[in-house]
Each structure stands twice: as structure tokens, then as C-alpha cells.
Image (cartoon, rainbow, N blue to C red):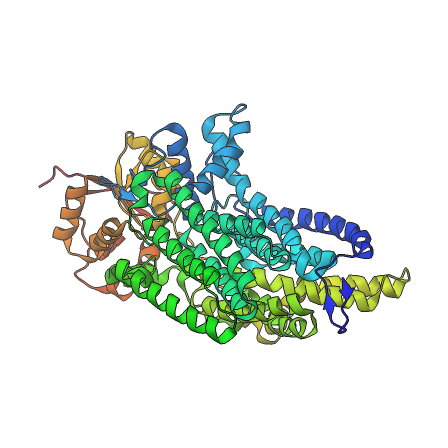
Length: 614
């Protein structure tokens, strides 16, 4: 941290004093992360090598996918979930990077335990390890902007952000944890590219962007923000920013091609899909490169000329893009039929609006506490910082506002403003620590502890106040559960032997795939349109339609959890003609359904299907 001639503060320059105090800060960060990882481990479902329990449905599906790859049941380029949507299978929109991470973690322990247990151990550990890596990366990423002491606070604070922590719990095997790590690395590289103007750093940033896109097309959001940041810099400072933009986007485009070839082979280059990396994204990246090629070679010296050039070239490329890929703006769910959206996706938690998520202001303040606190802090930092960091902070502020808005639109974006916010919290803490000083007295020590605590957990104050004044109003959303003990169904599947086709609630599908040899009709993935809709039609149609579904799919076992299904089906479950009433115990069973006894008090209703019955 140094003082500029204008009296503003540049925390991107690390002084020797900061380095000395930074060693203490890094030690504090290590202890803090150790404590936080311990907390995360305690919040998971528990490690069970007998039943291989993981945190959620996506975890079970991911583990199924990894095991199938490890055992050779599916090949590297196979995107099919062969035992879902039985007996037909369905394609998945997931990609291989997280599979590789899990298998890499499993490889050493595979020498000492059965393969299934080794893969499970890796699945248990991957969330906390990515969580800790994200925290460490945040320390590195924030140094150019807030100095070493502020960066240490940012590293601990990011590990306390609700969405980041939720995806880092034990046995949660989810690609979002990897996305958050890549996002933090992308931010750090962007800051270093802005400070150093180094083409090499811009290239690494572009490669990181390609890696994020490979993990999920959701990373198009950070990539777009990065491109806009370079665009704004070019409009202001001119040619030098254009050269960085060209290096960055060329590396991104080349990395996208390489990722696509590794993921899908040569056929992937000509594929057209919006929910996973495909040829569409190669086309998009190539057009962005074309823009920066034009910007870096054109002789434009005034800002006004650069604006007109950006509008002209950008407009032509936009028209060309939507002529070639007219569905691009529809997004990854653009091809989902309305029946599937209304009957399932509309109720998926991560697709809900953040306000009023859970029906409470407390939930909103908990998830958006850090970003809302960071907005005025970022404004203050922009006003007080030197030239290059001041410009970064102004862009940071605009980005925070946009991302908070996107999070209000859909919960799944909430981690991104939370991560951006911790940089502002780190800046605030560094400012307070400068005011307190490095004195050895008790008062100075108390001031440093208070400043650090405010930076790390201060964002929780609004939530605590809401809870104190509103009672239960301040609580967060209640997690959705499966409602019944599905282990009963697993026991029946094992007793049946072979690979029976099971018709059950879609959220039970991934667990059955991982823990048994069953094939399932429904699983909660938007490419399994037919399986999900047939699961609904079995319950909402009449007996004839239900019988046709089990015959066509070769169903051997059916399972119904009435309370869970009623919440899923809504008012349609009350239709007196719906087969749901029969299988939930309100009518006489047809001869082709044979009830399987369950313990008294167990709400799960199980049936064997006699397809030979007339």
C-alpha cells in the first residue's frame, strides 16, 4: 500500500511493512480456513462407506457418471446416461472436468481399497478441497486490489459466503464448486492483466475462461463481464487495451476449441447445443476475436471514433451471430417444453427468484448481505483509489449491481456477487487496520481484531437484526427433502436382482442409479423430458394410461411417496380420475399392481408390476 501524489491510496503495491504483517495475516488465514473446513465437514450428510451417502441428487448422479467412466461402462465421449429414462437412456449436459478431478483424487486411495470405495472417498472430499482452494485463490486474487492484509480477509470471507459454503460441503459432488474456483482465478488474472498490461497474463486469463466454459456454459457470464471490462478500457485508453483484448479472446477461443476436442472429439466442433460446450461457442468466441482484431488494427485515436467503431463492428457481428445461431439468446433451457417447465423446473430451488426466496427477508439478507454491504464500500473505494484501481472499482461496482439483479432473478447466480463482495470487505478491513495502526497496546490489538471480524462476518449483521426483530421471519428457506425412506426401495431392488426398471419420483432416480443396479424412468435433468413427463402421466392419467406407460417401458417396480408427490403435482393430484389416488391408497388397486409390504408408519408405497396380467 502506497500513497499517491494526489492523496489517494493504491493498495495494489505491496510494501515491506505489508509483507511483514502479511505473514501474520496468512497464518490467520490458514487457521481460519482450517476452522471453516471443519465447519463444512460437520454440515454434510456424514460419511458412510456402507451406503455411499452423498449430499443431494446431483451428487448421486455425478458419482454414477464417474463410476461408469471408471469401470468402462461408458466411454469418455459418451454423454448418455444409459440406465436413466429406461429403457432408452438420455443424454446429459454435464462435461468431464469434475469427473477427472474426482478420479484423480480417487487414484491414490484406489491402491488401498475397492474401487467403489475409493471413488466414494474422492466424492466425499472433493467439495471441501475445492472450497479450501477457492479461499486460497481469493487471497492470491485480491492482492493487486486490496493489498495482502485485505486479501487475507477476502480469503476467509469468501469461505463464509452462503452459496460458496453450500457447494463446498462434504460429499457434495457438484461442478459449481469448481466453477467458483475458476471464477476467483479469472478475477485475479484480470486484475493482474489490468495492472501489468501483460499479454501473457491476458492469455492465461483467456485459457481460464475456456476452462470455465468447459465446466459449464454458465461461465459465459464471467467471460462476458471480462470482455465488457476490456471493451470499456479500450474505449477509454485505446490501442493498448485492444491488444490485450485480442490476446485474451484469442486464447479463450483457442482454449474453447481444444476443450471441445478433448470433451467430444471432432464431431463436437460442428455440434449445436447451448447447455454444454459445443460448436456454437466456437462460433461466438471467433466472432469476439474478429471484433478485437478489427479494434487492434484500426487507426482510431479519439474516444468518439472508438465508440462508432465498436457499434459498427459489433452490430455487424451480432447480426451475423443471430443469423448463424438464432437460438443463442434463448439460453440453455430454450428447448425445454412448457409442460416440463411448469411441471418441474418452475419448482427447482436454484431457478427461483432470490426475492422473496423462502418467503422471508431474512433469507434474502443472508444470501445478499455481503453484496449489499459491498456496494457502498465499492463506491467509496472507487472515490479514494488511484487511477488504475479507481477504474477497476467503478467497474466492480457496476458489475455488483448487475449480479445482484441477476441473483434476484434466479438464485443460481448468487455466488458471483458474493465472491465479488469479499474484495470490498477486504478493502474496508485494510482501511480500518491502517487507521488502527500496528501498535502493540491492548487498544490497538482490540481494534485490529474488531476490524478483521467486521470484514469477515460483518455481512451477517443485517440477517441477525432481521432475526432478532422478526423472529422466524429471519430464517432461511427450508431445504427440500425426499419425504420418504427410500432405502426400502433400494432393498426391494436388490432383492429383485438384475436391472429392474423402477418408476419412482424423479429425485429418487439418481440415488437408485448409484446405490443399486436399477434402471429408472425419471431423473431430474432437463434432457430427460420423456422420462420426467411419463412419471407425471403415470400419476395424473387414468389407469389405462398408467398401464400403457409401464408396458412400454418395461417397469418392474413402482414406488409412490404420497406426501412428496402431492407437493410435486400440486392441485392436479386432487383430480378424482388421476391414478395418483389409486396408488396412494385411496382406491382399489388394479390386478397388474401387487403391493409390497412396508413397515407400519412408513409412507412409502411399493408395488411390483405384473405386466402379464390382463
